[in-house]
Amino acid sequence: MDKEIALEMRGVSKYFGSVTANKNVDLKVYKGEILAVLGENGSGKTTLMNMISGIYFPDEGQTFVNGEEAVIRSPQDAFKHKIGMIHQHFKLVDVFTAAQNIVLGVKNEPKPIDESKNAFLRFFAKIGRKMESGLYKKKEVAAQVKEIADKYGFEIDPKKKIYDMSVSEKQTVEIVKVLYRGANVLILDEPTAVLTPQETEKLFAVLRKMKEDGKSIIIITHKLNEVLAISDRVAVLRKGESVGEIATKDADENKLTELMVGKKVELNIERSLPQNPADRLVIKGLNLKNHDGVKVLDNVSFTAKSGEILGIAGIAGSGQKELLEAIAGLQRLESGDMIFHNPKKDKPVTFFHKDLHRVKELAKAGAFRYENGETVDFTGKSDKEIKELVNDGKVLFKEDEIIDLKDKTPLQIRELGIRLSFVPEDRLGMGLVGNMDIVDNMMLRSYRKGKSVFLDRGKPGKLADEIIEELEVVTPSAHTPVRKLSGGNVQKVLVGREIASAPKVLMAAYPVRGLDINSSYTIYNLLNKQKENGAAVIFVGEDLDVLIELCDRILVIGSGKVTGIVDGRNANKSEIGLLMTKTEGMDENGVESVKEAVNE
Image (cartoon, rainbow, N blue to C red; front, side):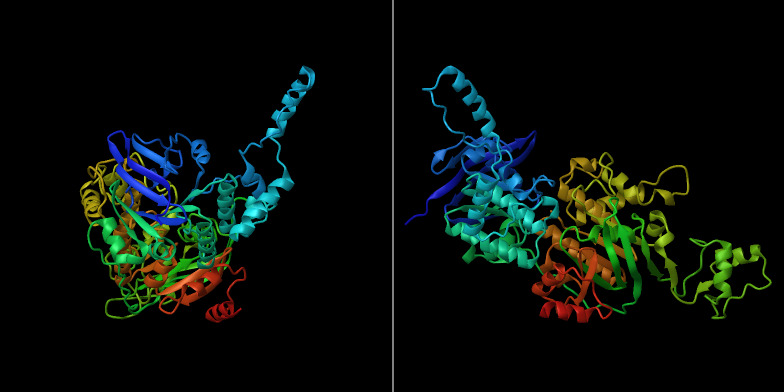
């Protein structure tokens, strides 16, 4: 027996000026099916889903719901056709309860007016009817929410405020909100991006029950392993067009990637063993409060070593962003130490970050030597003579330079070779200027090094061209303002610029967020090159599979505390997921606390 089609799009196209977002796209989703929609960054997936959910209206083509043509011009029209979308960024009111958010915007159907009554009574009945349509009936709503939760296996407290909820609880509210409105077709945009492995499994169990109940589910995701685990069919878009579909049982990661990219892509991350690792950044007892006085970092301690990639895993909002910003000098610490071991052994001493008085102190402590190995002694030398010796490069460090970053400015920290490549939701919010072109954004890191009143555009221009070519940045030219680029291409410019600076410590937070799989693996390989060049790489990621495959060690952070540090080569997702949900900090032995957490 053929399956019944719940939703169909035929020849759908959408244009934004001269840009074609979707062209002649065909898509079907059957009742009782989970369909995964895949495509590279900018392939038109989100635009297509926005047309189904009523945010955009197609310029060409037709949409059919249950075999009948449907005109969907707004989200309200979509709800009338029992279509609902759960966005990646939740649309909830924080100060409301779960139940209040679920019923928000839904009108009750008031009782009909008895026309046999006289005009006076009918007048007041109409007023009462209007008031009744806006009433929030707690008991009825709670009962309906409980019925939905029991039916599909949700865990939800209708009385709980949104601001007290975890990310997975907020997602549950969004899904129940759509089901409460009677949706039979549900669209989920990157539903597992901020969930732990355990929360992901719970979500998948719920989706399977919804599928068994005859619901049609469309999932947009970049995680191929999850596509293979949860979907029945996969539809693939490339450059805004349909390029095919495949039954999940007949697919694997390589086939799906080839369909998305149009060519074979190697999905291997070559993780080499760390060579001569040495302490590069030692963090001790960091404590930090946000603007509201809430503690976001609680006694955080760890060591980042040269020649290794240290991954940071945690539920979104656990303090990852604040930790990296603190190291970069962008946050004022409450307490703690950040010690940078500057690789200066056998290198010339300079007056960079050190005045003459400090140089004399270090020499007195025996920190320097001459080229012949003799310990430097400035006794009896004038200030002029000392300056000449230092400026001529005749005074060398005996060991690496130890620098406390706590009192340094962000600029001083950058000049030491500690670089932060942070990719937030607003990609133009940190590091790039939207109205500047790519070349000028490269110059933001080099203009201070100019030796004349005129800016040198040669080197930044060459760097911009290299980044465009190596990372395949889609742009008319290097002189295009970055605000005109897609989000993924803006991201490539930002990450490429920071990596090109040959840092001693590279902090990369969400560097592949929103990127297609081909570009993502390019970034992973670039991070590995930095590791092989001796940099200490700190990588904050959302995909645990990538963290396990890429990183040498993985630090897990939960509620602002370090809950464990595991070996990337021996770690598994379940182990890390448990640590992500812990609220107690790691003990002095670190690894032992990991074992205890897993065995609880």
